[in-house]
Image (cartoon, rainbow, N blue to C red):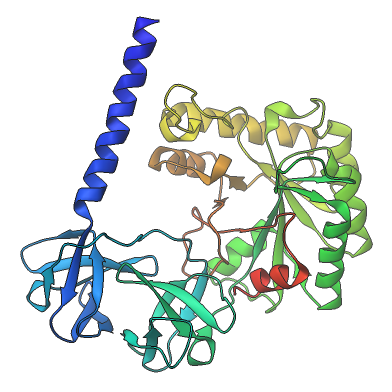
Length: 384
């Protein structure tokens, strides 16, 4: 018991130290002049004189902050430290925007409000999802707003993510979706001429080896619940759609999960891919996902074991080539082990669409949940 207490105190102290360091690193700067902002050596924006920004670190010449999800810097000669609480820098930024011209960043969702500054032309920047007529964006540690008519949204290809389906929902787990909502979403895709693709096609598109129709979508299910065969399969087949299921291979045949017969009888519509064999979990002592600290060789053996298990059930299916990281969490070792095990593309749970130029081992997905309307669903597909 004493050893357990010491371990808990140790990890708590590490967490507290990390939080303290992060808070100490975030400082607030007020600009004394109109200030150009750079990503490495490229000028990407301008902060207005008199605006206040949260900075995460500094060196001899520059303060560092964020625009969207990228780190940027500006001259220390342009600002002075002030005693003011820092703003929150972290936020989900799933929308990819492109600037054809100078784009103003407003202090409020109103074009008559004061501008914090502007973005330079020909910049790719990530923002939060549209709210009304404005895209919220982290702009130097503050939330600014971009008017939708001033910006071009780059759509990319959506990879939509489901988990379990039910006839009637009980409880508050938003990852569990009522089958009627799934049916309505598939009807929307059909009516609006979306084409379903496979992970192999997406990989080839990323490599610029093939072209895909503008309205291409990859439908995925995680974990391998029995509802994929019982509820999703008939709807997919009726709409002439295909999908991909990422299986936790050690759970095949367990209560609530797909059986081998389920997999065989649905393989005309569903491709079965890897969600690890038995590394879908957390260490209860450290709070770390298993893929975060498991040795590379053990990860390789686990992924290979899952590949072999799926192949033994579906020998006519092409070799397993795609992996979904449990909880979207991965380490350098897990990426390297995946490549050696024959994986060609791997998926996270980070929100956003996929674009050419993205790493095939860090691919975004759009989470579908029970609180979404069809309008929400449409916006995710279109990268908005």
